[in-house]
Length: 173
Image 1 (cartoon, rainbow, N blue to C red):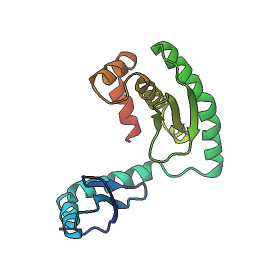
Image 2: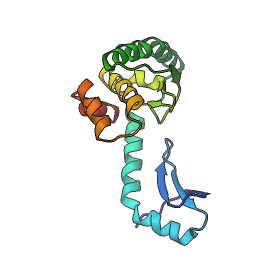
Image 3: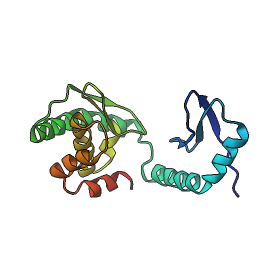
Image 4: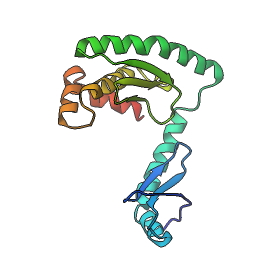
């Protein structure tokens, strides 16, 4: 069995979880009361998941290397123009009104919707096809109505983008 190095973050949580960082670091989030032996057993039981996710992370990093300074600036400029325009378009189609839009440099999250319906998007989305970008825009707009990923959320997503699964897959290539 493969041995993994990992970082333990203990907190008041009740459950244990695994996370693979953008740098392929294994992070174990565990309750204070959980012993190191129990954590080791948990990691060993999830070794195939860890191997699979590290491989996916490395493949994604090769497919989407960090852009140089000039490309980064082009992406940021395009994001500031393209994303608000697409949000306005799809918000109109969906009859929704986000409270604002922010462009960030997030590496691990393409978009988010705050409880106050403020949308955030990473400029890194500009490294992907427009179809994938539009998927993220509609996905986050759908969270204005449905704050979860339940059946109603996906029904709304499908009503606007019937091919949303294909578009989402573009983000995972």
